[in-house]
Length: 364
Picture (cartoon, rainbow, N blue to C red):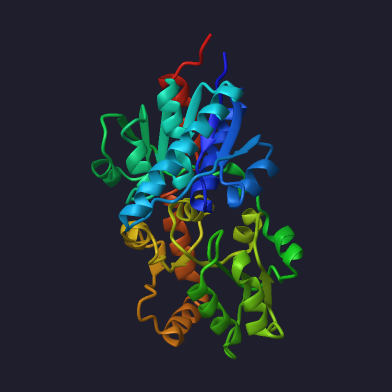
């Protein structure tokens, strides 16, 4: 027999893409998959495009301060849980897999009230608020890093599995990808990408790199949708050898042309970098729970796979020089790429699918 599995959560690529990797693996095992998330955020666009029946859950973020705001949040959460209960009943759900993000909580809590087993996955070293809440009611907690186990409450079984990546990330081919972007596959390419939402500081750095008169490499600059217009305006006329994209939903192509990737250090991004074996310069976002992106990035740095640059007090000119030197040093980039590859866990999604089946047998 097969499960009807609900993927719940999202908000950023760091939640959505691992969810879809696990969902795709479960689908290949014959299970029925649905996605519950925020219709206005990334999952609301990406999940339906990948063939997942989608339901929008009306969830609110937990307010960090203010008693009245917290009282209002409690009422909102109750309404969201009731909404999710109705969805779970209508879809005849038999298993919920939460992947983080505030929109996850109502579905996992609703599953608990209905006696539907729920597992959750935490991608980062420092768990988010939704996972800290839902760990109390989940039956299984899946972790990317062993250090996270002590940071989550509850008595549920905890398993370190890594961060799932979709195997299609490995399917890019440099020549075809370069043709798609209008780049020369024989010349080095730097790919700068600020994640699914984009990153202002990374965009600023990339513009400086693009304008460097000594630049001897090409650039694929993925700005993030919210920044595309202002970045295009800042460039005016694009310098030679620079390609601009607001968003890239075929990251296999971007990685295929990359000789160096400049990016944030969310766990799913790092898992993809390792899977494809790419050297990187990592700019951890300072706007995340417990500074977990820096913790993520330092692991790759210690392995020799990445250079970490912190935003606070960053000297753009000095970092541009550092990146230029790295782009001119092919042996070092090759060594960094090989180090990244040693950390790869491309089998995680398939392992999770098998683990869920073993832990939660489908109803007869």
